[in-house]
Image: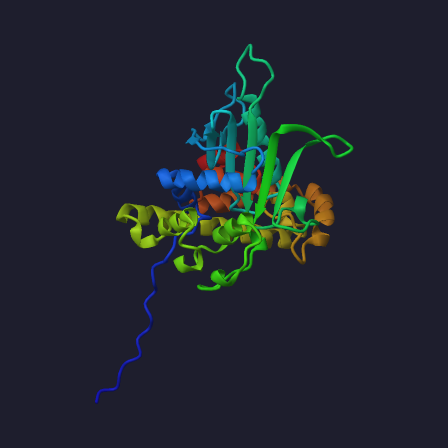
Length: 332
């Protein structure tokens, strides 16, 4: 008998697409009627009071221009109108930046400013923002739980206005699971079920979730990689590479900051530095970064990212430079 050769296992195609990529996120919540059902369910789960009884969601253009040319352009991940009287935006954070909280406020305010026409009374629509993060934001590092809401309140804590609500869903609070584990979990509520699904969809199996739950069944069915067309698979592959480039850029920025003697996140807008080993770097970085000219570091970081063919808008988001500054660097 011939000795059987040991063959190296072939790399397998992904079973499910990653919802944290731009392609995956938009496919699951923007394409087709089932995606709109999922989108409405997701929003109603995390904002039950303002969306009580909501039954219809309509996707809106995601680009919001300023009133004058020099004003900053806004491009959202998802923007929708619910029952004609509520605006909802969803943002998926793909890179740890100091500016994410500020950016979410700016995006929300842009919706407020676009909510009225000349001559209208100041009856602004209800505006909700769901911000999904892969890591804990510094603003919530001292809090327990995986979902936090922000509203306008008086000094004594009473709500000043119920028209504007920001919610932050922290996916890092959900443990990484193996296939089959999810079915053994007793969910505290639907918020937890959504969190575990978005955080672990690539590691889970369809039987992990109740087949009677149409929303989550469709979530898994539409996430199956084999269902993608050839062109969709190529688009997804590109989206995965962009996602990985962002993660590599974040790591590079941290290493650059360490070599420069200050926290790269504070100065480059990539990492706040609350992770272990960065705590002391924040205060020191604020002082040393100003002295050493952190703008030069930002530009150098941007040049390295551009050399890796990262899109200018991603480079701007990660480094803290404006898109105009990044494009100027790319032109040289």
